[in-house]
Amino acid sequence: MANIISSKIADFIVRFPPFDSLKTDEISSLSEEAEVLYFKKGESVFKHKEKARPFIYFLKEGQVLLRETVDAQKKLIDICDEGELFGVRAMLTGNPYVFEAFCQEESLVYAFPLSVFKPIVESNNNVSLFFASGLASGQKPTGLNTLYRQSDPDKVSDFLSWQKPLEELSEPLLLVKSNTTIKSAALEMTAKASNGIVVTNEEGKAVGIVTDTDFRAKVAGGTFSIEDPVSTIMSTNLIAKQLGLPLAEYLISMLKHNIKHLLITKEEEVVGVFSQQTLFSHLQFNPFSILYNIESAENVEKLCFHRNNVDHFLRYYLEQNIKTAVISQLITTINDALIKKAIQFSLAALDEEKYYRPDVPFAWISLGSEGREEQLLRTDQDNALIFGNVNAAQLNYTREYFIQLARRVNGILFQAGFAYCPANMMARNPDWCLSISEWKNRFEGWIHSPEKEALLLSTIFFDYRYIYGEEELVQMLNSFLKNEVQSHKIFLNFLAKNATKNPAPLSFFKNFVVERSGVHKEEFDLKARALMPLTDIARVLCLEAGNVTIKNTVERYRFLAEQDKSRKELYLQAAQAYEFLMHFRASEGIRNNDSGRFILIKQISKFDRQVLRNSFEPINELQQMIELRFQLNYFS
Image (tube, rainbow, N blue to C red; front, side, top):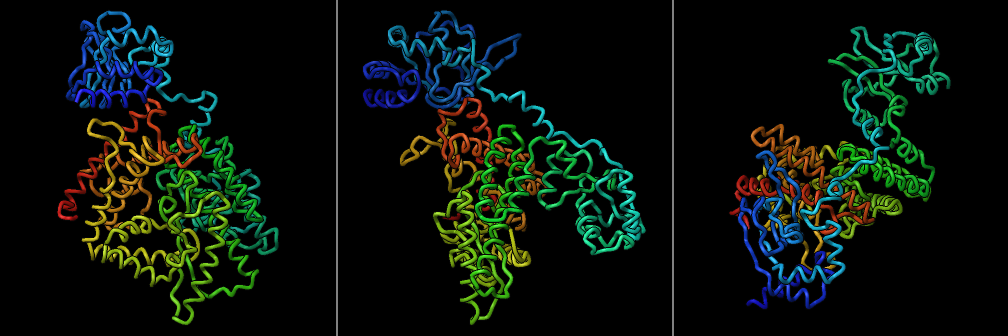
């Protein structure tokens, strides 16, 4: 038995420095002499000022805090994670322990006798360098700050500009009545050097806005006379935002609604107009140019070229630690513009090739992470197409036309860096290019017969989001889905069971549960073990609450926090955790030039490991909650 234990110890410690530079016989002698110690949560391995024991300690599982007592207060010095040595200073000096080694969690520790370990340190140059460089826990003359992310001082001002609230407007508010002539409005706008006029009705309520663009496009071109009322050229697509919000909020609204001016209100009263031009003066780096170039691209090559610039934009904002919610909305807006342009190019290509376009409405929908507005990195495509009902004689041709359309769109998205879905969950697949009636039948089948495959498809397709075409088709599907789920609530129990199938992110000893085989052996699956459980739980709880329109995971948890005050804190913690995990995955993906899904834990900083652990806490609590809520013990 002793040989088996020492062999397991040897296999484990050789993965970590400085043991990875030891000879085989040195590893063997250490492992054979090691003692295996178990500590409960709250116990100490050794205490401050305690006489040093003849061991150096290695943390196998759990978490140990090194704490110093200052003025009767415990001060955290360091956090020991799996694979780290502690008790080093006492080993090197023979003095009492200067820190307390406190077990924050149940911990398993290997104790290596100094009689075996110290000769190795003295004879092995690599091991000596390891300790001389302060790379073992408790050795902090240098390098403590490397545990924490540092911002580039040159970029701080730009980062703050995003978060800075809009406290005042530089331009005066210009109000004109709707019956004012275009000529009078233009003269007043020129006199005040303003770039926007708010048009009001007789009651003084804002009903429209007129800008330089309206004068150029509608008056200079001869469409309207300068003696016509200004109401004939005003834009009525009014979006209002409160004064005092961060600049990022105004940027997102402009991008989302494809507008260049916002009404700014204070206590529900319009106090001014905020323009894209003014926003440019506040923000050094903005996505407007990328969006404009995508929307005005003349061909597929230029479209793809401009989409590639988003990678630089994403890296920049991740480095600035801009809120993940802001980044994801910006990326979503740009991706949506890309898809719309791809559809327009594809429709034009079919027309040019003399394909007969059926007189049938259709809607393009995004699924999965893009459907949830969470696709920061370019991953594989998940999309589908809905078309209006037609008679049996027209069905085959109608479907074939839209499949041809989808093939072209999917191809353009592929050229833009979005890989084809390995499971072929794309609109070009006849299974996912269906009439509205066929989609209803498909949803009904999944809900009435929640087999394994049906549940898997539900988790993907119920996160659909309208992108292009006839939005009413999507609204019809929303109403159908809501009614079906509410009238067949047993389906939610199966969906909840499915949401708990992924293993917990942490082991019993609070270590990361990594893959034990395959190409990703020893890597942590961030998507399957952390992001997916949070996504799946948010989905099933929103469906239970009857909300089928919110798709974003963070927004789902915020909605749930408002609906269920008793669990508000838990839901908000889940939202915060999800945002961090998205940000972390995107950062890792950019750093490693991959999807960011699989992570080598030993390659990330101790600080990030601790924040990751903290972000996992809501997962277990949420899973336990839905197990009770949906009585999952009764479902196999």
